Amino acid sequence: MSTVAQVASNILNAQHSTGPRTAETKAISSQNSLKHGLTAKTVLLPGEDPAEYQSFSDHIISDLAPATEVESALARELVDLQWRLLRVPTLEARILSADNPDGIPDFRALNNISLHASRMKR
Image (tube, rainbow, N blue to C red; front, side, top):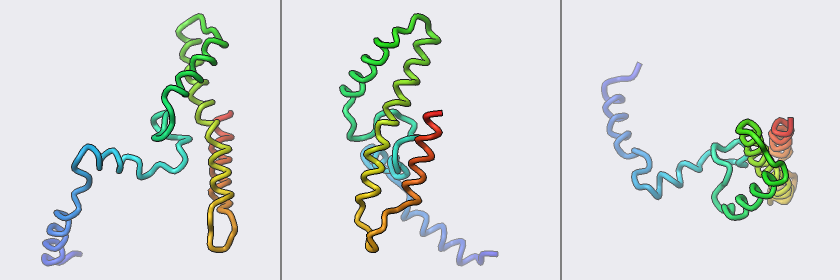
């Protein structure tokens, strides 16, 4: 059980950490949990070129030539999945080349990326 003094202290301390307030700091903090982007809510990540994605999307969809709404939806889903999968080699290279004090790559992170990629391919 917390004492009255502890509760009062917690209330005072909470006033100092109210989270992001401006649009800029909110945008920054919204990316705090972004690790690899394979399961991100949005397909495009910060730093990725929207024009490149659009070109990629246009080429695949024109090749698939969807004729119905269902086919169009499936084609868009395929584009999004493929775009995410294209990140995997870059992520793996970044993990393998990361500067660690002991010089050993983070095999757990590498395994995690591999599992996400395998699930997406299925």
